[in-house]
Image: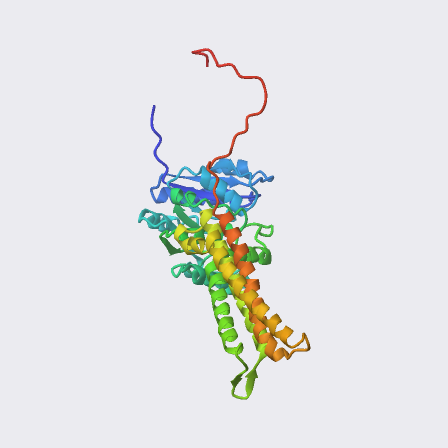
Length: 408
């Protein structure tokens, strides 16, 4: 019995009706692997093609596996799970990526980098290969946003479809996005896990298909943007919330004793209303961001350390204490306002005087309720069942007799 050589590189091609271009992609990848002296395979992860793509791929020398979860991410996830190589290099099956130039990716992976991103802007984009809207707006904006939100200063082409990675390291992330946003999920989750990410130049050519691409500019662009924003609650919710709440608190502190003159402008009760609103909105943004971080930690989407402070603050005991203190302060202010009103025989009051007590008191009551409820939600998010696996419920029925010894 001879041992087969260990496969080092799997070239992964997601496929949905790519009969026009699949064969040339497979042959380019196999030829490049041979030129690099790499023991590798081409794996086609088929998403339910009906144009004979499976047979074409097998005749060209690829291994074909079905991907039952529909979508770009679904096909790649299925392929990554079935890949035999230590490293995986993924690319579209439309003959737009440089599958004949795998060497830069392989060398970077062998050097120990966890993820190797292709950069089409450095390698060259052929005329007509990328729509102007993608080239000059979509990709630059989303790449800039990804760098700002996740500290990916070394990634200039956030959504290049050709990239390589250490298969075991990526499997350990538990990726799950089935759609086009999988491209963002892979690099974001790798960055949050502290993986070593580098870029190599690659080229982009016009695809060889006669039909329109699966990519939908606005729909898929929005899905990428939504994923980036939702996956960075500290930047998109927590920090803005703290700033808004702090500005509101400064306004409340300044306006509660009386009007504030700023040159020719006088800030009075109307400004106090908006200051109180800023406190409420800012606090809720920060708390919602904290709850999102706790959820990400519990689902192992983000590093555990990122939400530890929020878990301590939103413990039920802590949030109940803070919430009750806020409720008590707000109630005391409200009782004081009603008592003063009673001294005046419940007659008409001067709103410029009364609202300076009523507004901060009502804000404290509302904020106390928000903190209390957030503590309940935070506590629910940190609960975990005693058993990590599914609970098997035995169905009623006749007892099964043990098999006799030696029986298969």
